Length: 238
Image (cartoon, rainbow, N blue to C red):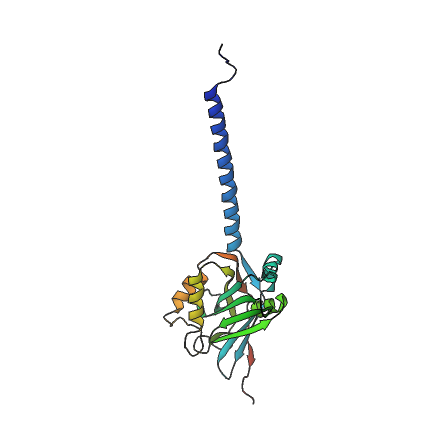
């Protein structure tokens, strides 16, 4: 006697429809998450900053802080001794213009050394590289996110007494090791200031690859500063 209360074909169609619906729902959620991430990465944060113009040397320096970028998750990773790299890239432009006058960058690499029970912090910036030790995550954050006296241009690139804006990107743990090495080679190359101007052969490479390209990173943020008038300073005693 045949049981007509169950139809195998109908059951198969039911489960196929259910699986397709589930797959579509998951795809929509993934697309929405990707869209949210892309929207977040495209947001530009306005940051406070400061420019100093060394009238004796004809050099422009930038002060910038981004301690707020190091959230509880990143602090936890630092406390567990996980290696961390923070990269800052920026251009300097006339206020109201998007055409860069000069460029600058800084990389901060943090490594925990078990035997010393301390962090080794390596900071590379235009024309210089320095290493220092600290035993606390606070020391790491201060060295990596409180940027002081960063060389950002010279008198051949930027006229004295003009209003300026810095814009760029901060990346935490960039995935691309090649990109990181290019930045390090760029800022350490032999030159008068370590920065690049529009006439420099590497200028378009820097602005096109390091600033406009959104690479994979654990965390990244675009930023711009408020309109700034550099403070005149004198490096030589009067």
